Structure formats: structure tokens, C-alpha cells
Length: 322
Ligand code: NDP
Ligand code: DGY
Image 1 (tube, protein in one colour):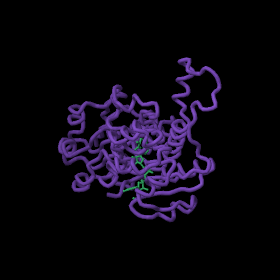
Image 2 (spheres, helix red, strand yellow):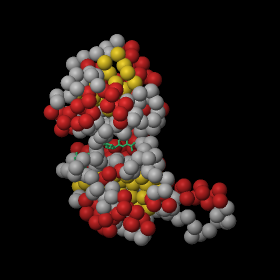
Image 3 (cartoon, helix red, strand yellow):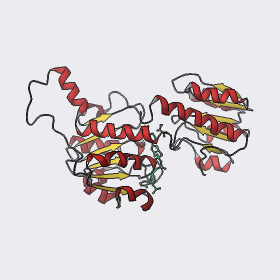
Image 4 (cartoon, helix red, strand yellow):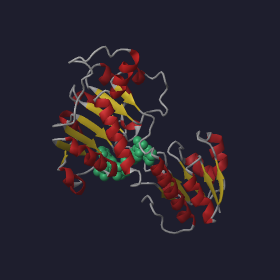
């Protein structure tokens, strides 16, 4: 059997694949994304595909792969880059990497929240550029978590792990929204299930940790931001497309909301002349939620084991239910 790997991955994952002796491996051995033409050529005739979140695995790729392809393993928990209906129709199994990246992503979400609400990048810049002239009572003030209401859009694995980390900061109340109430996820934080509009209106901090689906695409839009308080902070570590970025820009420029912290954008990378990058009250990170050495290593091993199990027609350690 033959497998195609679309990117350079941590050596632990590649070792797991090559030492198993289950398939021969062809790889795009680069840190940079594979050009589309190379992807289409590389998948042809392969039985397995190990891809990353920036590879669009759509009908064209599946057609190029042909009928040998039976397993797709993505080095991510997000699966919005996969044409799931088409994949299901073709009887292809999908492996992904939930759980093992939850802690790292929640940690980064909290770091981004604190950096944004306490204006850390702006403050560091002031130290460097001479803006720090003396201690000033009204200077560089932000917003704190103590006594606040935090609204979480998507109280799944990462959403709960974020709530768990924020609770000790003295958060007074957690709100959450999703496709339906999840009392089992909410009980630990006594989180209240509310409609999206109410979450926007009552939260001091909004944290987006949902998956990107047709239902969540663009939900953080003009109407959403117009309901938020002028003192509220918006954080997104899910996917860029959950947010209408033009509406977010207007909300930040007009003072409709206080600040935003984004680990994910549309597109990625965000062009360096993008208007959002000109704003002091917007902190943007380059999609590093799961970027710890240990997490990326574990993700690569899990993705390799998912692929191998699929090729051997065994049960996968983490299979997406299609
Ligand atoms: P989960 O499946 O555990 O959680 C996803 C959550 O999204 C669920 O609670 C689900 O709620 C919620 N959701 C679905 N539809 C809606 C909706 N219409 N409104 C509000 N919430 C909704 O996934 P994870 O927590 O493991 O991961 C979540 C996402 O985080 C990933 O899909 C990925 O896109 C992103 N991610 C980003 C990373 C980064 O580097 N920044 C790292 C890892 C993940 P319900 O069950 O009620 O539908
Ligand atoms: C994911 O896994 O979906 C993240 O975006 C990257 O780890």
C-alpha cells in the first residue's frame, strides 16, 4: 500500500509510519504548503493520505486520488478543510486528533485573552518606543477577569478546558451557546445555556471555541458585535470564518467593543497590510493554539496511528464519525 503525506511532520509521527512496515510513504517534505498541482499528482493512486488543515481535501483531490483511497488522516481536530459529504459517499474513513491538543489550545486561548484584555503587546511596544515616560494613573488600563461574565461559544473539549482555566481568576458567571444545552459539560462551571444574542449582550469576555460548520460560519457579525458591551473583549481560537472580519474591524474602530484577540483569521496568513493589523486593540497570533513541542509530536503520532489503522482496516485510535 502507498500513503501520501502532505507536509513535513514531527519525526515521531514519521517514524511511527515508516517503522510500521504497512505502507510505502511519499511525502511533501517541506514546512511550506504543498502546491495544489503537487497535491493532485501526489495523491494519485494512494491508499492513504495524511494531511494538514491548510490542505483543502475536496472533490478534485478525491477524484485525483482515485478509488484506492480508503483512509484520510488529518493532523488536526478541526475537519472543516475536508469535504466530508463527498468523503462519506466514497466510503473513505477519516482520522483526526481530538483531546491531545485540548490543554495546549486552552492554555493559548487564556494567554491570548490576558494579553488582549491587559494590553500586553501594546505595553511592550511602549517600553521599546519610549512611550513609557513615568507611572501614570490612567495609562494602559485594561479589563480584568475578576467578577466578570465569560461567554463561551462552543462548550466542547477546548471550551470546557478554557472555562476550567479561567474559573480560578474569579469569573463570576459562565454563559455558553451551542446547538443544544450540554448540562454534562456545563455543570462544573454552573454555566448557563443562552441564545447567542444574550451571550453577546451579557458577556464581558466572549471566547469562541466552536467548530466551523455551515451553522457557525460568520455568526460573529455586525449584529453580534452591536449587542456586545463597549467594554467587552472578543477572543477567537476556533476558525477565522466564524467571524465576519469586516464587521469585527468596524466594531473595533468605532469602539463598539473594547478589544479582540485572534489566533485564527481569514485568510491565513493574514496579509501584512490587512486593516486589522493597524489596530492597537486587536492582538493577532499566527494560529499557534496547539503549538507546543509535546502536543505537535503527540498529534503526529496519533495521525500516523489513525492512518495505519485505516490502512489495516482496524479500528482507529481517533476516528471521526461520518
Ligand atoms: P469539540 O467538538 O469538542 O467542540 C466543538 C464545539 O462547537 C461543541 O461544543 C459544539 O457544540 C460547538 N458548536 C457546534 N455548532 C455550534 C453552534 N452552532 N453554535 C455554537 N457552538 C457550536 O471540538 P474541540 O473543542 O476539540 O475543538 C473545537 C475547534 O477548535 C476545532 O474544530 C478547531 O476548529 C479549533 N481548534 C483551533 C486550534 C488553534 O490552533 N487555534 C487548535 C485546536 C482546535 P454542540 O455539541 O452543542 O454542537
Ligand atoms: C486543529 O487541530 O484544528 C488546530 O487548528 C491546529 O492544531
